[in-house]
Picture 1 (cartoon, one colour):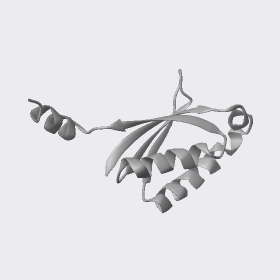
Picture 2 (tube, one colour):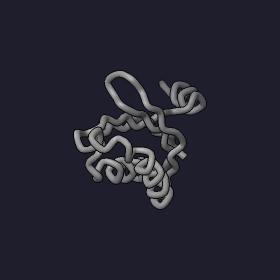
Picture 3 (cartoon, rainbow, N blue to C red):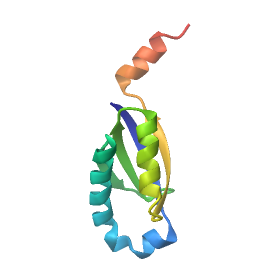
Picture 4 (tube, rainbow, N blue to C red):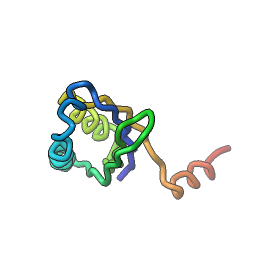
Length: 97
């Protein structure tokens, strides 16, 4: 499975209902599984983003579905990054001309 780093910012409705966030994370975990992905970890962060999620999905299409599903509830906006393992990085570099 591929790894994705998802960066989130709360929307105004999301921050207004911040106490509901733990339940929303639980619901997201179930929804991700139903889509064939896995929510591996969630971190509250300080700075430009409010929280970060590490997600594993079989492909980019599944990752896009996960991102859209989480964002469609209106509590967050997101940015998704494809993350490559060190092994994948080494393979990519080795294949360069």
